[in-house]
Length: 154
Image (spheres, rainbow, N blue to C red):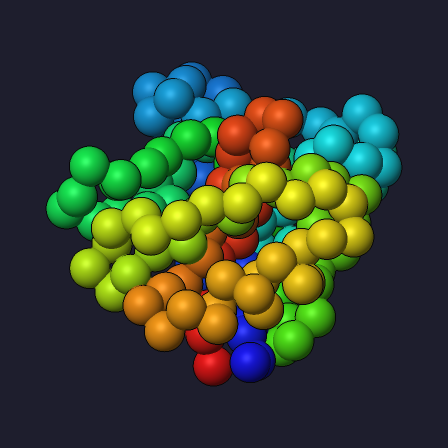
């Protein structure tokens, strides 16, 4: 079973970097600076920002479906990065993190979920996709709950 993981498209976020702090606050977003090389995971590049890098922290609807499982939470995005793509491998932002894997059918209804520790995600993803009813998996950081990335069946 093969799968792919793609970072969010940077285009919808690009205008945010031109806003001042008041403009960002008006849409419940914030400009932040990474204070460490870990802990500021960009959802476009699927890498952690390095200390000193600028990011926008914003509310993002990651599971935009008309079911009870519609989901939104805070994410970080960085300026000037391209959407990362990974096929049959995990992005750097998954490394060393416990993840919640939420497996969905094509209609957006949750089928099952798994909590995985560091180093366990690849096997769990492949195992979940053994079920033909599962179309995609949304990975979330288990501790903070924020959306990490969508994993799609190839």
